[in-house]
Image 1 (tube, one colour):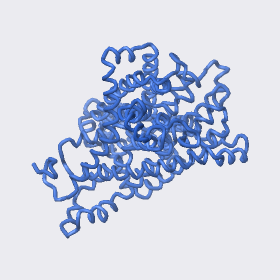
Image 2: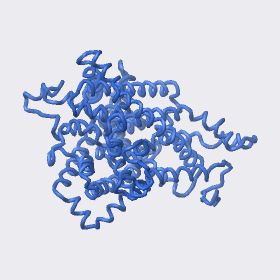
Image 3: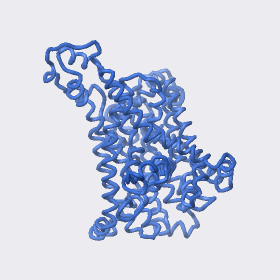
Image 4: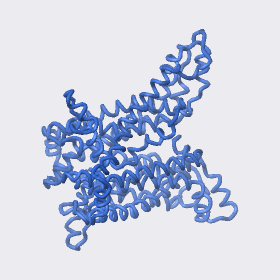
Amino acid sequence: MATVNGLALKRPSVIPGFGLALGFALTYLGLIVLIPLAAMVLKAATLGFAGFWDIVVSPRTLAALRLSFVTSLVAASINAIFGVIIAWVLVRYDFPGKRLLDAFVDLPFALPTAVAGIALTAIYAPNGWIGSWLAPLGIKVAYTPLGILVALIFIGLPFVVRTVQPVLEEFSREIEEAAATLGARRDQTIVRIILPALVPAILTGFALALARAVGEYGSVIFIAGNIPYVSEIAPLLIVIRLEEFGYAEATAIGTAMLLISFGLLLFIHLVQPGGVGDSAMTDVSLTPVLRPGNHGTEVTTERWPVRALLIGVAVVFLALFLLLPLAAVFVEAFRVGATAYFDAITEPDALAAVRLTLLVAAIAVPANLVFGLAAAWAIAKFEFRGKSFLNALIDLPFSVSPVIAGLIYVLLFGAQGYLGPYLQSHDIQIVFALPGIVLATIFVTVPFVARELVPLMQEQGTQDEEAALSLGASGWQTFFKVTLPNVRWALLYGVVLCNARAMGEFGAVSVVSGHIRGRTNTMPLHVEILYNEYNFAAAFAVASLLALLALLTLTIKVTLEWRYADQIAATRRH
């Protein structure tokens, strides 16, 4: 057992920087994630079990929690079914527009949730594009739990597709050919050979979609109607309690959701697929389906009617839930003309929101870039105790509701928070000011850069660094001239995703901003204010700027994947 700066390594390493990288990563996570979350848990503990339980089981809270989890469960189940179909179509079939369709699967990752929310409302409202057709049939989507379900399907779909897709890509066609040669029908091969191998990936995608949906706020509040006991979700109830200065109630609900998020995160790590070489695939038995028989030449694909049907289902589903909302943003933005559009995006409050959004991203993204590099260096280049825990800790913000991300900073730095009196006595303002917005944004974007770097750096190993060190290079020279060039495209990829999320963050920023027009309103918050004032054209005009950012993000992503497919693909295999 070797030690570096007092930290135990499982095996010796000639690569320097373990103590610095791990120390920085743990300190950063402690300050940004663990201490604020601990503040909420401690605040909940002051209620006592009886007080905590009374709040959690109160009728309104139970109704909100039940609605959040039931709709999330249904949405994740729908996404698991259609996500597998879409992944299958994208991997197994070739057809016109396939690459474009594949790119748009990631739209919910890049499009701010507030923009998605007003777009879905414009489509499914009683006077909306689709809602006006459904209303005569007695079907009401917007302002009902069904509207919440639509929003949750939108934000959760990519998790299933992007989890199943790489497993399908790595699945050996030889196994299918062997099954067909020995007598298995195509449906038997799919049900008994392919699907069992996909189960871990499907479960992981399902759990990720469920965790994301449970805490969703931005895309839901516009289409839900927010009626207590009917269409009021748990994150919204937290915000309502905060606005009523009911910190105890907000803390209890937030803690209950946090505990459930921990459970989902644990489940995700337990079922995380490791690729085609794992037991999920190698343990599949061919014996039950190996029967003699005659076979066509295409033994590893479906007949053309089945292919056409599956492609049609995938295209319609993606068009209905992803492409149509994007189109709605731009159509509604220009509904009253170009002059009104440009007036909306150039008025003083809109420009102030743009400047604040850019400033917050300019602080949060570089901070998470440095953290991502440090965490990836420690995790990928060294073996040490607690490595899996660090990995799980980095993923934690993925499963925490953005509203809770804002709440924890209010409980820590707000007027009634642990540090509130001290900050007030020294005239330091964090909550309802720029520092609070930056902290909340950093929290929700912590994993993005690290999650793109770690798998690639693990796959590359340590040979290049060891060779550079043996030739006399210093640790910093090795990092900047060997490691960084090797991961530059994955790094850029992570930065692009991190920036898109930072500029579009709504839930966490909404809690800590104070909604001061022209001062603490970012672009998504400005969209909300305009929408709530029934200034729909202006709201969609500002939203279109964020939609353009989403399209730019997708364009950069597709370009990187096309030009540097091998490096980017490595991040998908872990």
